[in-house]
Length: 122
Image (cartoon, rainbow, N blue to C red; front, top):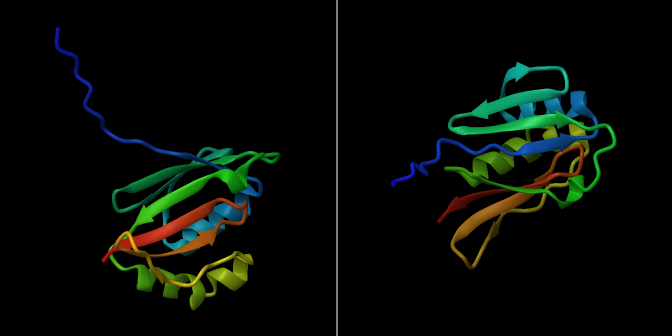
């Protein structure tokens, strides 16, 4: 018997302590809010999708890490630091670093403390 184990997609549920603030953050970051169901929002950018979940007492948000691979990490870093996202949302942003494993990347935390590593292959 043959089983069809092909995958179609995978999405992460990102916890949001302040749901409205996090929705605004991701919109400003460039993601499109495709659907907002009140306590769950579906975001998309290109082929990248995720769900933002309203969890007012979310625990361990600072233990979740996302890895977003992009075509131009410098452009993303510029958008976050110079585009006022960093100051508007008071989020932490690291400098761009050329990693020994062949990626140029930086990190940014969302308003709930979820860490995003934004990287490109070099």
